[in-house]
Length: 75
Ligand code: SF4
Ligand code: SF4
Image 1 (cartoon, rainbow, N blue to C red):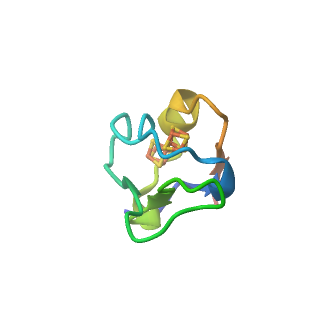
Image 2 (image 1 turned 60 degrees about the vertical axis):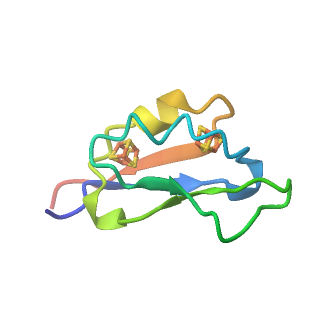
Image 3 (image 1 turned 30 degrees about the horizontal axis):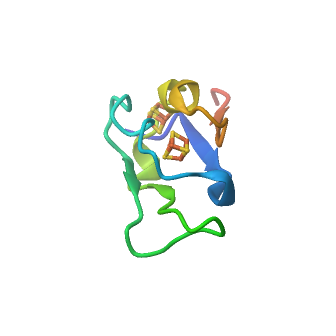
């Protein structure tokens, strides 16, 4: 399935709370345990960007508005 959108993560503002992960219907969000951001938190990353359906559930859940969703226009 081709991606319908993508998310932009303001990584250095992420506090690694994980609230955005569970609501993703295609299960492509995770915390990157291999690194930390400027605040010292484990940041969110997208495991498989091609699967994003631009539903915005993740962005709605984030208490700090770290995530912006871009929806691709239909060709
Ligand atoms: S916009 Fe929807 S599909 Fe895309 S990462 Fe967020 S919750 Fe998942
Ligand atoms: S909800 Fe926001 S602050 Fe929490 S892990 Fe997701 S992007 Fe980071």
